[in-house]
Image (tube, rainbow, N blue to C red; front, side, top):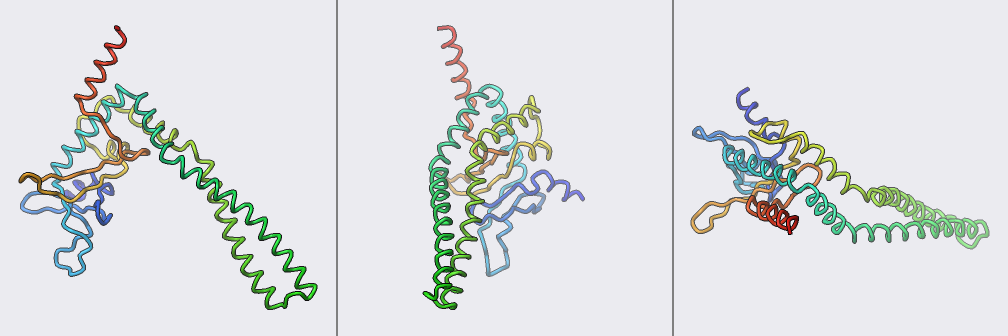
Length: 244
């Protein structure tokens, strides 16, 4: 029960950056740490390397990031919303155009297939093609038509969903407004604000162990949060512009 309770804080949230496996809680010599589930110590079929992060280090890092994220939103909510929406729209602009072009092609192709189907039916009735040729062509056209209609249905829904970025940002803002401050990590806080945490393999730089950890926030993914110094500088700049 004690182990399950401890594991519950980051349960279903930690993933390996290389193989995508979940990280599992381990205990060794009193130290609690999370290790990549794709790593098997005694197996020849090692899916991944021994990615791990100490629980205490992860708690401190995530708590600090969430505190900084909340402070950022409380001070610069409008800036955050604009940046998130502009970024999302820019990323999806070409993809949306490509889907719309594909949708137009498929609609033209379904009309053409239906025309060809009528033609081979008439040709078969008039003896211009054999029954075998008719059945073979009709099967090919029916399969292509079914695939085209299925893809049209999917693309139509995707094209309609152009306001997803705005809705997602609004959802995250609504969640963050529940908290005036975050003093400790709880499952409620993590599940409300965090979608997943991706753990990279540690590296040695200048004799020191360094490790990258990506926090994917609910609804919007990774957010580039300004440092405390950058936020202070921006606040000072705004005050100066108002008094100028």
